[in-house]
Length: 81
Image (cartoon, rainbow, N blue to C red):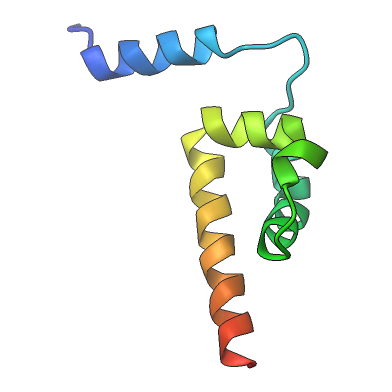
């Protein structure tokens, strides 16, 4: 089995950004809608929810969910104005 350099880079980045307090995907998913709403309201959700922010920065799957929700809510909001 050959090691993939990109996978190794991602793993090293994940290890380097690990902190004492973290949340998993389930917890992140529970709060991602609030995170998105805060961002759309012009607030700084990273300040209020640093664990969600940290998880979104480390987890590509959750980040994709966040981006999709952000786009969907923006589209809905833009169409209602």
